[in-house]
Image 1 (cartoon, rainbow, N blue to C red):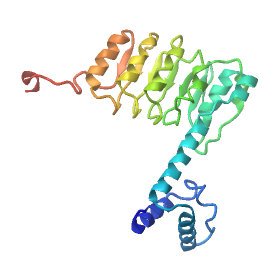
Image 2 (tube, rainbow, N blue to C red; image 1 turned 120 degrees about the horizontal axis):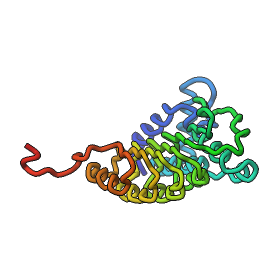
Image 3 (cartoon, one colour; image 1 turned 60 degrees about the vertical axis):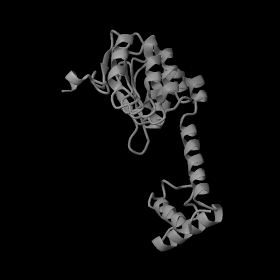
Image 4 (cartoon, rainbow, N blue to C red; image 1 turned 45 degrees about the horizontal axis):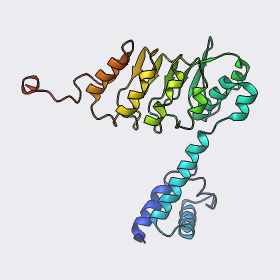
Amino acid sequence: MAAPRAFLHLASSIWKWGPRDIRGLSRTVAPEGSQRKGRALLQFLADHFYDVEALREYLFRKQVLKVHQKNRSFTHIKEQYGPYIAGAYFVLKQGGAVKFQGQEWMQSNGRGRFSLDFFKFQAVPVEAVDASGCAINYQGLDNLLALKELQSLSLQRCPHVDDWCLSRLHQLAGSLQELSLAGCPQVSERGLACLHHLQKLRRLDISDLPAVSNPGLTRILVEEMLPNCEVLGADWAQGLKLGPEEQS
């Protein structure tokens, strides 16, 4: 059993998130008065959780379920409108942007809403996807791998994109020319090695990858692996161990 002080401190920090961030916890909270809200929330926590670890586990499960829900496949849309519309709908629902061939970029607004005009482009391939910062994971890639004419894909700062995700990108080898993985915290050298299938790549951004232990050497190896691709990211000397003369 965790100390009461730690429990109250965590409950207080959770309350500062606001009602939108704790919708599942705030249903019993009174609508007026901060003191009443605080008491109602603490009472809810006391009724449902025995200690801090139980609360953490609940919040973690809720977050996992949320990510899983965001990465579901829109099979019914794909069957009715085809893979282009289903893929575009998935990206827009995630808060990203898409570009159909010959069309302007389409993206959702700050509230996650977007125009449904793209449904008329059922026969127009999607040529570019900007999913920067989206919660795409291994499962969610199913919606993008069906875009066989996709030329540009940005997965910058996607927290759930990992080496296993990169191992699936070979399915876009026939079309993909630009790929950005900048700022993806779970991408390492192993995942980058899987990109050797993408021989049509002309631009690859691998900057700011904290899981890559030796960025300089990794960039050299990637350039050898993809000789016709411009690799952006770490300097060649970054992370390399230099001799005494080079260091001086």
